[in-house]
Image 1 (cartoon, rainbow, N blue to C red):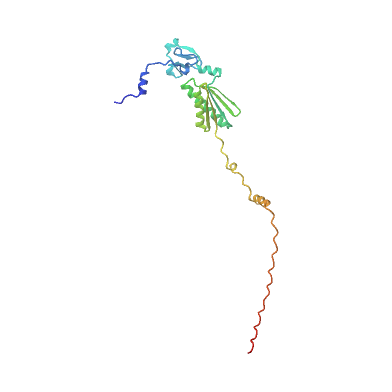
Image 2 (image 1 turned 45 degrees about the horizontal axis):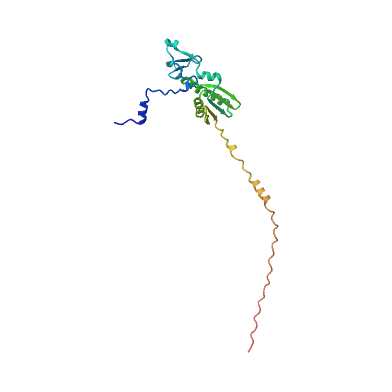
Length: 228
């Protein structure tokens, strides 16, 4: 029979124990009583998590025991406090700008349905820059990833020491046309003229010399033999 690994043994030893650490939802006010109902958005804090589903809502008989207060996300939106910042840079067509805005709002609404503490604080445009502030750094990371997945481009992330995240998304550069990509070639005639201007002027040709007349040698007549 196979023995348990060390990790399984340690996990079994921790069953039923508590560490006493505070989760992200308890860092502002500490660990309080449960259940807590937000008086603005209706989110419920139970089992150390903020939820908005119908299953997490307390029963009608226990409404008297509910503590009513404002959730951390509603406080962040009211005070304009953010933990994530997404910047969209570049000139965009009106259709693409509208599509990007719809995409960001849809992703944020889906995230808020399952995790009410992840919301958009503000979305403002100034010239060619669209700034989106979020209550959670994870939501800003997700928005940048969704833009890169849907519209291409590139997203850069920068984490700060305080846990906040700053992301910047830039669209893909427009492809250059073939006519603009090709450089105009210099005319061949211009090159010849330039080389001819640089060349030294040719010297005048010397007149051709006439061939010298050769004197025709006369053959000597044979001398007559002397008679003995």
